Image 1: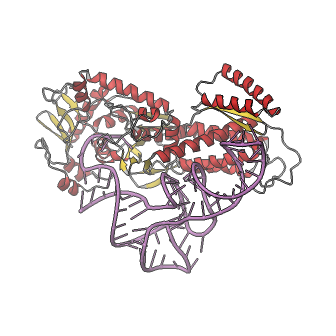
Image 2 (image 1 turned 30 degrees about the vertical axis):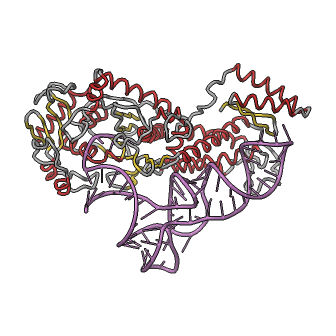
Image 3 (image 1 turned 30 degrees about the horizontal axis):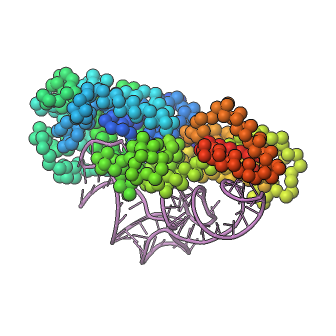
Length: 507
RNA sequence: GGUUUCGUGGCCGAGUGGCUAGGCAGCGGUCUGCAAAACCGUCCACAGCGGUUCGACUCCGCUCGAAACCUCCA
Protein backbone atom coordinates (compact mmCIF):
# COMPACT_ATOMS: atom_id res chain seq x y z
CA UNK A 1 0.00 0.00 0.00
CA UNK A 2 1.40 3.35 -1.03
CA UNK A 3 1.19 5.81 1.80
CA UNK A 4 1.31 9.18 0.23
CA UNK A 5 0.30 11.41 3.09
CA UNK A 6 -1.04 14.81 2.15
CA UNK A 7 -1.42 17.49 4.79
CA UNK A 8 -2.89 20.97 4.60
CA UNK A 9 -0.21 23.57 5.08
CA UNK A 10 -1.58 26.87 6.37
CA UNK A 11 1.43 28.63 4.89
CA UNK A 12 0.48 27.72 1.32
CA UNK A 13 -3.22 27.00 1.99
CA UNK A 14 -2.85 23.82 0.00
CA UNK A 15 -2.61 20.14 0.68
CA UNK A 16 1.00 19.13 0.25
CA UNK A 17 2.73 15.80 0.15
CA UNK A 18 4.31 15.14 3.51
CA UNK A 19 8.03 14.69 3.03
CA UNK A 20 9.97 14.95 6.27
CA UNK A 21 13.29 16.73 6.22
CA UNK A 22 15.22 13.79 7.65
CA UNK A 23 13.34 10.56 7.16
CA UNK A 24 12.67 8.32 8.94
CA UNK A 25 12.61 11.03 11.61
CA UNK A 26 9.78 13.50 11.93
CA UNK A 27 9.63 16.46 14.27
CA UNK A 28 6.43 18.06 15.48
CA UNK A 29 5.87 21.00 17.80
CA UNK A 30 2.43 21.91 19.13
CA UNK A 31 1.45 24.87 21.28
CA UNK A 32 0.25 23.54 24.60
CA UNK A 33 -1.82 25.09 27.36
CA UNK A 34 -1.20 28.05 29.59
CA UNK A 35 -1.67 26.44 32.97
CA UNK A 36 -3.75 28.86 34.97
CA UNK A 37 -7.16 27.19 34.82
CA UNK A 38 -8.87 23.85 34.54
CA UNK A 39 -8.70 22.32 31.05
CA UNK A 40 -11.89 22.77 29.05
CA UNK A 41 -13.35 21.31 25.87
CA UNK A 42 -11.35 23.76 23.78
CA UNK A 43 -8.11 22.29 25.08
CA UNK A 44 -9.21 18.83 24.05
CA UNK A 45 -9.40 19.72 20.36
CA UNK A 46 -5.74 20.39 19.55
CA UNK A 47 -4.61 17.72 22.00
CA UNK A 48 -6.72 15.08 20.24
CA UNK A 49 -6.10 16.43 16.74
CA UNK A 50 -2.34 16.28 17.07
CA UNK A 51 -2.51 13.07 19.06
CA UNK A 52 -4.02 11.48 15.95
CA UNK A 53 -1.34 13.06 13.77
CA UNK A 54 1.30 11.71 16.18
CA UNK A 55 -0.26 8.24 16.18
CA UNK A 56 -0.61 8.11 12.42
CA UNK A 57 2.96 9.20 11.77
CA UNK A 58 4.12 6.51 14.20
CA UNK A 59 1.90 4.00 12.42
CA UNK A 60 3.49 4.91 9.11
CA UNK A 61 6.82 4.03 10.64
CA UNK A 62 8.27 7.47 11.29
CA UNK A 63 10.42 7.99 14.33
CA UNK A 64 8.53 10.96 15.70
CA UNK A 65 9.71 13.46 18.26
CA UNK A 66 6.61 15.28 19.44
CA UNK A 67 7.17 18.38 21.57
CA UNK A 68 4.29 20.13 23.30
CA UNK A 69 5.07 22.98 25.64
CA UNK A 70 3.57 23.99 28.95
CA UNK A 71 3.30 27.74 29.26
CA UNK A 72 3.88 28.69 32.85
CA UNK A 73 5.11 32.22 32.34
CA UNK A 74 4.89 35.09 29.93
CA UNK A 75 1.24 35.44 29.03
CA UNK A 76 0.02 38.81 30.08
CA UNK A 77 -3.47 39.44 31.28
CA UNK A 78 -4.45 42.28 29.01
CA UNK A 79 -3.34 45.37 27.19
CA UNK A 80 -0.79 43.80 24.92
CA UNK A 81 2.63 43.70 26.53
CA UNK A 82 1.67 45.83 29.45
CA UNK A 83 -0.01 44.21 32.39
CA UNK A 84 0.32 41.34 34.73
CA UNK A 85 1.28 37.77 34.22
CA UNK A 86 -1.76 35.48 34.28
CA UNK A 87 -0.21 32.98 36.58
CA UNK A 88 1.12 35.65 38.92
CA UNK A 89 -2.34 37.19 39.21
CA UNK A 90 -3.88 33.86 40.03
CA UNK A 91 -1.12 33.24 42.56
CA UNK A 92 -1.75 36.52 44.35
CA UNK A 93 -5.47 35.90 44.48
CA UNK A 94 -5.01 32.42 45.89
CA UNK A 95 -2.02 33.28 48.11
CA UNK A 96 0.22 30.73 46.46
CA UNK A 97 3.58 30.58 44.79
CA UNK A 98 3.16 31.07 41.03
CA UNK A 99 4.83 27.73 40.47
CA UNK A 100 2.29 26.10 42.76
CA UNK A 101 -0.48 27.28 40.48
CA UNK A 102 1.35 26.17 37.37
CA UNK A 103 2.07 22.76 38.88
CA UNK A 104 -1.51 22.24 40.01
CA UNK A 105 -3.05 23.05 36.65
CA UNK A 106 -0.37 21.22 34.69
CA UNK A 107 -1.20 18.13 36.73
CA UNK A 108 -4.89 18.66 36.07
CA UNK A 109 -4.14 18.97 32.35
CA UNK A 110 -2.24 15.68 32.34
CA UNK A 111 -5.00 13.88 34.24
CA UNK A 112 -7.65 14.92 31.75
CA UNK A 113 -5.51 14.32 28.69
CA UNK A 114 -4.78 10.83 29.99
CA UNK A 115 -8.51 10.27 30.41
CA UNK A 116 -8.99 11.28 26.77
CA UNK A 117 -6.32 8.72 25.88
CA UNK A 118 -4.07 11.43 24.48
CA UNK A 119 -0.58 9.99 24.28
CA UNK A 120 2.06 11.87 26.21
CA UNK A 121 4.34 13.77 23.83
CA UNK A 122 8.02 12.91 23.66
CA UNK A 123 9.01 16.12 25.44
CA UNK A 124 6.87 18.60 27.40
CA UNK A 125 9.13 21.53 28.09
CA UNK A 126 8.13 24.44 30.31
CA UNK A 127 8.77 28.05 29.44
CA UNK A 128 10.12 28.81 32.91
CA UNK A 129 12.76 26.14 32.48
CA UNK A 130 14.07 27.68 29.28
CA UNK A 131 14.75 31.28 30.20
CA UNK A 132 18.39 30.95 29.20
CA UNK A 133 17.48 29.71 25.72
CA UNK A 134 15.04 32.56 25.34
CA UNK A 135 17.59 35.15 26.42
CA UNK A 136 19.99 33.69 23.88
CA UNK A 137 17.44 34.05 21.14
CA UNK A 138 16.76 37.67 22.07
CA UNK A 139 20.50 38.30 21.77
CA UNK A 140 20.60 36.66 18.37
CA UNK A 141 17.75 38.80 17.13
CA UNK A 142 19.41 41.93 18.52
CA UNK A 143 22.68 41.01 16.82
CA UNK A 144 20.88 40.46 13.55
CA UNK A 145 19.52 43.98 13.91
CA UNK A 146 15.84 43.14 14.05
CA UNK A 147 15.23 44.25 17.62
CA UNK A 148 15.94 47.26 19.81
CA UNK A 149 16.25 47.88 23.52
CA UNK A 150 14.32 50.54 25.39
CA UNK A 151 14.50 50.96 29.17
CA UNK A 152 15.46 47.36 29.80
CA UNK A 153 12.85 45.94 27.48
CA UNK A 154 13.55 44.51 24.04
CA UNK A 155 11.12 44.79 21.14
CA UNK A 156 11.02 43.11 17.78
CA UNK A 157 11.30 45.64 14.96
CA UNK A 158 8.50 44.57 12.67
CA UNK A 159 8.92 47.41 10.22
CA UNK A 160 12.57 46.73 9.65
CA UNK A 161 11.96 43.01 9.43
CA UNK A 162 9.32 43.60 6.78
CA UNK A 163 11.83 45.27 4.52
CA UNK A 164 13.87 42.09 4.33
CA UNK A 165 11.22 39.44 4.82
CA UNK A 166 7.47 39.10 4.83
CA UNK A 167 5.75 39.65 8.15
CA UNK A 168 2.19 38.45 7.57
CA UNK A 169 2.81 35.60 5.15
CA UNK A 170 1.13 33.04 7.38
CA UNK A 171 -1.96 35.01 8.31
CA UNK A 172 -2.27 36.96 5.07
CA UNK A 173 -1.89 40.26 6.80
CA UNK A 174 -0.35 43.39 5.32
CA UNK A 175 1.95 45.50 7.45
CA UNK A 176 0.33 48.77 6.45
CA UNK A 177 -3.00 47.51 7.73
CA UNK A 178 -1.39 46.33 10.92
CA UNK A 179 0.17 49.70 11.53
CA UNK A 180 -3.02 51.60 10.92
CA UNK A 181 -5.35 49.14 12.57
CA UNK A 182 -3.49 48.20 15.71
CA UNK A 183 -5.26 49.78 18.60
CA UNK A 184 -3.62 52.54 20.56
CA UNK A 185 -3.06 51.15 24.01
CA UNK A 186 -1.50 52.21 27.23
CA UNK A 187 2.21 51.60 27.67
CA UNK A 188 3.00 51.48 23.98
CA UNK A 189 5.13 54.59 23.98
CA UNK A 190 8.32 52.53 24.26
CA UNK A 191 7.68 50.91 20.92
CA UNK A 192 8.77 52.46 17.69
CA UNK A 193 5.80 50.98 15.97
CA UNK A 194 2.50 49.67 17.35
CA UNK A 195 2.97 46.42 15.44
CA UNK A 196 6.22 45.66 17.27
CA UNK A 197 6.05 42.99 19.94
CA UNK A 198 8.03 42.38 23.11
CA UNK A 199 10.87 39.88 23.24
CA UNK A 200 11.89 40.78 26.77
CA UNK A 201 10.01 42.87 29.30
CA UNK A 202 11.51 44.63 32.26
CA UNK A 203 9.60 43.63 35.38
CA UNK A 204 7.85 46.23 37.46
CA UNK A 205 8.74 46.15 41.17
CA UNK A 206 5.53 44.29 42.10
CA UNK A 207 6.06 41.65 39.43
CA UNK A 208 6.77 38.29 41.06
CA UNK A 209 8.04 36.22 38.14
CA UNK A 210 11.36 37.64 37.05
CA UNK A 211 14.75 36.53 35.85
CA UNK A 212 18.06 38.36 35.36
CA UNK A 213 19.09 39.17 31.79
CA UNK A 214 21.58 41.45 30.03
CA UNK A 215 18.83 44.07 29.73
CA UNK A 216 16.95 43.97 33.01
CA UNK A 217 15.38 41.77 35.62
CA UNK A 218 12.34 40.73 33.71
CA UNK A 219 10.57 38.03 31.77
CA UNK A 220 10.38 36.80 28.18
CA UNK A 221 7.80 37.94 25.67
CA UNK A 222 4.98 35.58 24.97
CA UNK A 223 5.92 34.43 21.46
CA UNK A 224 9.46 33.59 22.37
CA UNK A 225 9.14 30.35 24.29
CA UNK A 226 7.86 28.33 21.34
CA UNK A 227 10.65 29.53 19.06
CA UNK A 228 13.31 28.88 21.67
CA UNK A 229 12.07 25.46 22.75
CA UNK A 230 11.28 24.15 19.28
CA UNK A 231 14.76 25.13 18.18
CA UNK A 232 16.31 23.49 21.20
CA UNK A 233 14.55 20.15 20.87
CA UNK A 234 13.76 19.84 17.17
CA UNK A 235 16.60 21.80 15.65
CA UNK A 236 16.54 24.95 13.58
CA UNK A 237 14.51 23.18 10.90
CA UNK A 238 11.71 20.77 11.62
CA UNK A 239 8.65 19.31 9.95
CA UNK A 240 5.36 20.16 11.61
CA UNK A 241 4.18 23.01 13.80
CA UNK A 242 0.63 22.75 15.06
CA UNK A 243 -1.80 24.70 17.16
CA UNK A 244 -5.23 26.29 17.28
CA UNK A 245 -6.31 28.64 14.50
CA UNK A 246 -6.67 31.39 17.04
CA UNK A 247 -2.90 31.36 17.46
CA UNK A 248 -2.24 32.06 13.80
CA UNK A 249 -1.89 35.74 14.41
CA UNK A 250 0.03 37.13 16.09
CA UNK A 251 1.61 34.16 17.84
CA UNK A 252 2.68 31.93 14.95
CA UNK A 253 3.34 34.86 12.65
CA UNK A 254 5.74 36.20 15.25
CA UNK A 255 7.36 32.81 15.72
CA UNK A 256 8.21 32.73 12.04
CA UNK A 257 9.69 36.22 12.29
CA UNK A 258 11.70 35.38 15.40
CA UNK A 259 13.22 32.27 13.86
CA UNK A 260 13.94 33.98 10.58
CA UNK A 261 15.63 36.85 12.40
CA UNK A 262 17.59 34.73 14.85
CA UNK A 263 18.52 31.78 12.66
CA UNK A 264 18.61 33.40 9.24
CA UNK A 265 15.95 31.08 7.86
CA UNK A 266 12.51 29.75 8.67
CA UNK A 267 12.33 26.61 10.71
CA UNK A 268 8.90 25.11 10.04
CA UNK A 269 8.03 23.15 6.89
CA UNK A 270 4.33 22.46 7.49
CA UNK A 271 1.97 24.58 9.59
CA UNK A 272 -1.16 22.77 10.77
CA UNK A 273 -4.07 24.47 12.50
CA UNK A 274 -7.09 22.95 14.13
CA UNK A 275 -10.36 24.88 14.13
CA UNK A 276 -12.38 25.94 17.15
CA UNK A 277 -15.14 24.32 19.13
CA UNK A 278 -18.15 26.59 19.24
CA UNK A 279 -21.04 26.81 21.60
CA UNK A 280 -24.16 28.49 20.28
CA UNK A 281 -22.13 29.46 17.24
CA UNK A 282 -19.43 31.22 19.26
CA UNK A 283 -15.94 30.13 20.12
CA UNK A 284 -15.70 28.37 23.43
CA UNK A 285 -12.99 30.28 25.18
CA UNK A 286 -11.60 31.42 28.43
CA UNK A 287 -12.08 35.09 27.73
CA UNK A 288 -15.70 34.71 26.68
CA UNK A 289 -16.47 32.79 29.83
CA UNK A 290 -18.59 30.31 27.87
CA UNK A 291 -16.33 27.32 28.32
CA UNK A 292 -17.25 24.01 29.90
CA UNK A 293 -14.39 22.23 31.65
CA UNK A 294 -13.61 18.61 30.97
CA UNK A 295 -14.30 17.85 34.61
CA UNK A 296 -17.79 19.25 34.13
CA UNK A 297 -18.31 17.10 31.06
CA UNK A 298 -17.25 13.95 32.86
CA UNK A 299 -19.44 14.65 35.89
CA UNK A 300 -22.32 16.31 34.05
CA UNK A 301 -22.22 19.17 36.55
CA UNK A 302 -22.85 22.18 34.36
CA UNK A 303 -26.07 24.00 33.63
CA UNK A 304 -25.70 23.45 29.87
CA UNK A 305 -25.23 19.70 30.16
CA UNK A 306 -28.18 17.34 30.23
CA UNK A 307 -26.04 14.42 31.37
CA UNK A 308 -22.41 13.41 31.96
CA UNK A 309 -20.38 12.47 28.91
CA UNK A 310 -17.51 10.02 29.02
CA UNK A 311 -14.03 10.89 27.87
CA UNK A 312 -14.38 8.57 24.90
CA UNK A 313 -17.66 10.22 23.89
CA UNK A 314 -15.84 13.56 23.87
CA UNK A 315 -12.97 12.12 21.87
CA UNK A 316 -15.29 10.46 19.37
CA UNK A 317 -17.38 13.61 19.08
CA UNK A 318 -14.29 15.63 18.18
CA UNK A 319 -13.04 13.03 15.69
CA UNK A 320 -16.39 12.92 13.90
CA UNK A 321 -15.55 16.32 12.49
CA UNK A 322 -12.52 17.14 10.37
CA UNK A 323 -9.91 19.01 12.39
CA UNK A 324 -10.06 22.09 10.16
CA UNK A 325 -13.82 22.51 10.58
CA UNK A 326 -15.47 24.19 13.48
CA UNK A 327 -17.46 21.78 15.57
CA UNK A 328 -20.52 22.98 17.38
CA UNK A 329 -21.21 21.69 20.84
CA UNK A 330 -24.74 20.64 21.77
CA UNK A 331 -26.26 17.96 23.93
CA UNK A 332 -27.97 16.49 20.89
CA UNK A 333 -24.70 16.18 19.02
CA UNK A 334 -22.93 14.63 22.01
CA UNK A 335 -25.72 12.14 22.60
CA UNK A 336 -25.59 11.17 18.94
CA UNK A 337 -21.85 10.67 19.30
CA UNK A 338 -22.37 8.59 22.43
CA UNK A 339 -24.84 6.29 20.68
CA UNK A 340 -22.74 6.03 17.56
CA UNK A 341 -19.67 5.09 19.57
CA UNK A 342 -21.68 2.51 21.48
CA UNK A 343 -22.79 0.97 18.21
CA UNK A 344 -19.22 0.85 16.98
CA UNK A 345 -17.95 -0.80 20.16
CA UNK A 346 -20.82 -3.28 20.20
CA UNK A 347 -19.96 -4.18 16.63
CA UNK A 348 -16.38 -4.84 17.63
CA UNK A 349 -17.47 -7.01 20.55
CA UNK A 350 -19.64 -9.01 18.20
CA UNK A 351 -16.67 -9.46 15.92
CA UNK A 352 -14.52 -10.71 18.78
CA UNK A 353 -17.19 -13.18 19.83
CA UNK A 354 -17.42 -14.57 16.32
CA UNK A 355 -13.73 -15.28 16.54
CA UNK A 356 -11.96 -17.35 13.96
CA UNK A 357 -14.48 -19.52 12.21
CA UNK A 358 -13.86 -22.52 10.00
CA UNK A 359 -14.11 -21.57 6.40
CA UNK A 360 -17.46 -22.46 4.92
CA UNK A 361 -16.58 -24.62 1.96
CA UNK A 362 -19.62 -24.74 -0.26
CA UNK A 363 -20.63 -21.23 -1.14
CA UNK A 364 -24.27 -20.76 -0.29
CA UNK A 365 -26.21 -19.69 -3.34
CA UNK A 366 -28.80 -18.00 -1.16
CA UNK A 367 -26.44 -15.43 0.24
CA UNK A 368 -27.74 -12.00 0.84
CA UNK A 369 -27.81 -9.98 -2.37
CA UNK A 370 -25.32 -7.44 -1.02
CA UNK A 371 -22.83 -10.19 -0.36
CA UNK A 372 -20.75 -10.33 -3.49
CA UNK A 373 -19.84 -13.71 -4.89
CA UNK A 374 -16.41 -14.84 -3.90
CA UNK A 375 -13.91 -16.78 -5.88
CA UNK A 376 -12.13 -19.61 -4.17
CA UNK A 377 -10.21 -18.51 -1.08
CA UNK A 378 -10.16 -14.87 -2.02
CA UNK A 379 -10.74 -12.15 0.51
CA UNK A 380 -13.98 -10.24 0.38
CA UNK A 381 -13.26 -7.24 -1.86
CA UNK A 382 -15.51 -5.06 0.29
CA UNK A 383 -13.32 -5.57 3.32
CA UNK A 384 -10.11 -4.94 1.43
CA UNK A 385 -11.76 -1.79 0.16
CA UNK A 386 -12.66 -0.71 3.69
CA UNK A 387 -9.07 -0.92 4.70
CA UNK A 388 -7.93 0.99 1.64
CA UNK A 389 -10.60 3.62 2.25
CA UNK A 390 -9.37 4.12 5.80
CA UNK A 391 -5.81 4.64 4.62
CA UNK A 392 -6.96 6.94 1.85
CA UNK A 393 -8.94 9.01 4.34
CA UNK A 394 -6.03 9.34 6.78
CA UNK A 395 -3.69 10.19 3.91
CA UNK A 396 -6.06 12.94 2.84
CA UNK A 397 -5.16 15.39 5.58
CA UNK A 398 -6.18 13.11 8.46
CA UNK A 399 -9.85 12.81 7.49
CA UNK A 400 -11.10 11.02 10.59
CA UNK A 401 -14.84 11.36 9.77
CA UNK A 402 -14.34 9.26 6.65
CA UNK A 403 -12.43 6.64 8.64
CA UNK A 404 -15.33 6.49 11.08
CA UNK A 405 -17.86 6.17 8.25
CA UNK A 406 -15.92 3.17 6.95
CA UNK A 407 -15.83 1.62 10.40
CA UNK A 408 -19.61 1.89 10.56
CA UNK A 409 -19.75 0.07 7.25
CA UNK A 410 -17.58 -2.63 8.81
CA UNK A 411 -20.05 -2.89 11.70
CA UNK A 412 -22.88 -3.31 9.22
CA UNK A 413 -21.10 -6.27 7.66
CA UNK A 414 -20.26 -7.75 11.07
CA UNK A 415 -23.86 -7.54 12.27
CA UNK A 416 -25.14 -8.92 9.02
CA UNK A 417 -22.83 -11.92 9.33
CA UNK A 418 -23.81 -12.31 12.96
CA UNK A 419 -27.44 -12.44 11.89
CA UNK A 420 -26.52 -15.25 9.48
CA UNK A 421 -27.58 -13.10 6.56
CA UNK A 422 -24.25 -13.50 4.89
CA UNK A 423 -21.01 -15.38 5.31
CA UNK A 424 -17.46 -14.21 5.25
CA UNK A 425 -14.25 -16.13 5.52
CA UNK A 426 -11.98 -16.55 8.48
CA UNK A 427 -9.41 -14.38 6.77
CA UNK A 428 -11.99 -11.66 6.40
CA UNK A 429 -12.77 -11.80 10.10
CA UNK A 430 -9.10 -11.43 10.85
CA UNK A 431 -8.85 -8.53 8.44
CA UNK A 432 -11.85 -6.83 10.02
CA UNK A 433 -10.31 -7.17 13.44
CA UNK A 434 -7.09 -5.73 12.11
CA UNK A 435 -8.97 -2.73 10.72
CA UNK A 436 -10.48 -2.02 14.13
CA UNK A 437 -7.20 -2.54 15.95
CA UNK A 438 -5.26 -0.32 13.61
CA UNK A 439 -7.72 2.48 12.94
CA UNK A 440 -10.22 2.72 15.76
CA UNK A 441 -7.95 1.81 18.64
CA UNK A 442 -4.48 2.51 17.31
CA UNK A 443 -4.85 5.66 15.25
CA UNK A 444 -8.07 7.28 16.41
CA UNK A 445 -7.11 6.28 19.95
CA UNK A 446 -10.53 5.09 21.06
CA UNK A 447 -10.52 2.76 24.04
CA UNK A 448 -13.20 0.68 25.59
CA UNK A 449 -13.90 2.77 28.65
CA UNK A 450 -17.02 1.02 29.84
CA UNK A 451 -17.30 -1.84 32.27
CA UNK A 452 -14.56 -0.58 34.53
CA UNK A 453 -15.79 -2.80 37.34
CA UNK A 454 -15.43 -5.98 35.38
CA UNK A 455 -13.34 -8.61 37.00
CA UNK A 456 -13.01 -12.35 36.88
CA UNK A 457 -15.38 -12.57 39.83
CA UNK A 458 -18.01 -10.48 38.09
CA UNK A 459 -17.60 -12.46 34.89
CA UNK A 460 -18.01 -15.70 36.81
CA UNK A 461 -21.08 -14.48 38.66
CA UNK A 462 -22.67 -13.23 35.49
CA UNK A 463 -22.08 -16.53 33.79
CA UNK A 464 -23.84 -18.28 36.69
CA UNK A 465 -26.73 -15.84 36.83
CA UNK A 466 -27.34 -15.98 33.11
CA UNK A 467 -27.21 -19.78 33.17
CA UNK A 468 -29.94 -19.80 35.82
CA UNK A 469 -31.94 -17.28 33.84
CA UNK A 470 -31.54 -19.36 30.70
CA UNK A 471 -33.08 -22.35 32.51
CA UNK A 472 -36.09 -20.31 33.54
CA UNK A 473 -36.45 -19.13 29.96
CA UNK A 474 -36.36 -22.66 28.67
CA UNK A 475 -39.24 -23.56 30.98
CA UNK A 476 -41.02 -20.38 29.91
CA UNK A 477 -40.82 -19.01 33.43
CA UNK A 478 -40.86 -15.45 32.15
CA UNK A 479 -41.50 -14.01 35.62
CA UNK A 480 -38.16 -15.23 36.94
CA UNK A 481 -36.25 -14.36 33.78
CA UNK A 482 -37.64 -10.82 33.71
CA UNK A 483 -37.00 -10.40 37.41
CA UNK A 484 -33.33 -11.24 36.91
CA UNK A 485 -33.04 -8.92 33.94
CA UNK A 486 -34.68 -6.04 35.78
CA UNK A 487 -32.59 -6.53 38.91
CA UNK A 488 -29.42 -6.50 36.81
CA UNK A 489 -30.59 -3.37 35.02
CA UNK A 490 -30.75 -1.57 38.35
CA UNK A 491 -27.04 -2.39 38.71
CA UNK A 492 -26.54 -0.89 35.21
CA UNK A 493 -26.00 -4.30 33.72
CA UNK A 494 -27.90 -4.69 30.47
CA UNK A 495 -28.86 -8.13 29.25
CA UNK A 496 -29.84 -8.72 25.66
CA UNK A 497 -31.25 -12.00 24.43
CA UNK A 498 -29.97 -13.16 21.09
CA UNK A 499 -30.42 -16.30 19.09
CA UNK A 500 -27.33 -17.92 20.59
CA UNK A 501 -27.95 -17.02 24.22
CA UNK A 502 -27.76 -13.77 26.12
CA UNK A 503 -25.09 -11.13 26.15
CA UNK A 504 -24.48 -8.55 28.85
CA UNK A 505 -22.49 -5.44 29.53
CA UNK A 506 -22.07 -2.81 32.21
CA UNK A 507 -23.29 0.63 31.23
C1' G B 1 -12.80 48.55 8.20
C1' G B 2 -8.81 44.67 7.05
C1' U B 3 -7.25 39.34 6.98
C1' U B 4 -8.92 34.23 6.93
C1' U B 5 -12.92 30.93 6.45
C1' C B 6 -17.75 29.12 6.09
C1' G B 7 -23.14 28.59 4.77
C1' U B 8 -25.33 20.74 3.09
C1' G B 9 -31.58 17.24 4.84
C1' G B 10 -35.13 17.47 11.98
C1' C B 11 -29.86 17.56 14.52
C1' C B 12 -24.42 16.64 13.92
C1' G B 13 -21.22 16.23 9.96
C1' A B 14 -18.12 14.36 5.07
C1' G B 15 -17.48 14.85 -0.07
C1' U B 16 -17.53 15.40 -5.43
C1' G B 17 -18.29 18.82 -12.09
C1' G B 18 -22.56 13.72 -14.06
C1' C B 19 -22.45 7.76 -9.73
C1' U B 20 -25.22 5.98 -1.73
C1' A B 21 -21.13 9.71 2.65
C1' G B 22 -21.73 8.34 7.77
C1' G B 23 -24.00 8.93 12.72
C1' C B 24 -28.42 10.38 15.68
C1' A B 25 -33.70 11.03 15.23
C1' G B 26 -38.39 9.61 12.09
C1' C B 27 -41.41 6.12 9.15
C1' G B 28 -42.51 0.92 7.18
C1' G B 29 -41.03 -4.19 7.58
C1' U B 30 -38.16 -8.84 9.38
C1' C B 31 -36.69 -11.27 13.81
C1' U B 32 -38.36 -11.90 18.97
C1' G B 33 -42.22 -14.82 25.02
C1' C B 34 -41.54 -9.57 26.15
C1' A B 35 -37.71 -5.86 25.99
C1' A B 36 -33.38 -4.43 23.68
C1' A B 37 -30.17 -5.11 19.81
C1' A B 38 -29.61 -6.28 14.85
C1' C B 39 -31.03 -6.55 9.66
C1' C B 40 -33.83 -4.73 5.19
C1' G B 41 -36.47 -0.75 2.98
C1' U B 42 -37.73 4.48 3.18
C1' C B 43 -38.50 10.17 3.84
C1' C B 44 -35.83 14.86 4.38
C1' A B 45 -30.26 18.53 1.08
C1' C B 46 -26.75 21.22 -0.78
C1' A B 47 -28.39 30.08 1.63
C1' G B 48 -30.27 33.34 -2.65
C1' C B 49 -29.47 35.36 -7.67
C1' G B 50 -26.72 35.31 -12.08
C1' G B 51 -22.66 33.15 -15.17
C1' U B 52 -19.30 29.15 -17.31
C1' U B 53 -20.64 24.02 -18.98
C1' C B 54 -23.72 18.93 -22.66
C1' G B 55 -24.40 18.88 -17.28
C1' A B 56 -22.96 22.27 -10.89
C1' C B 57 -24.36 21.11 -4.43
C1' U B 58 -19.28 20.96 -6.58
C1' C B 59 -15.99 26.27 -10.80
C1' C B 60 -16.63 32.02 -11.28
C1' G B 61 -19.22 36.68 -9.80
C1' C B 62 -22.67 39.26 -6.84
C1' U B 63 -26.20 39.46 -2.66
C1' C B 64 -27.62 37.91 2.13
C1' G B 65 -26.04 35.52 6.64
C1' A B 66 -22.34 33.42 10.19
C1' A B 67 -17.56 32.71 12.56
C1' A B 68 -12.26 33.30 13.79
C1' C B 69 -8.18 36.69 13.93
C1' C B 70 -6.61 42.09 13.98
C1' U B 71 -5.96 42.45 22.60
C1' C B 72 -4.80 37.11 26.40
C1' C B 73 -7.36 32.74 24.34
C1' A B 74 -6.65 25.81 22.07
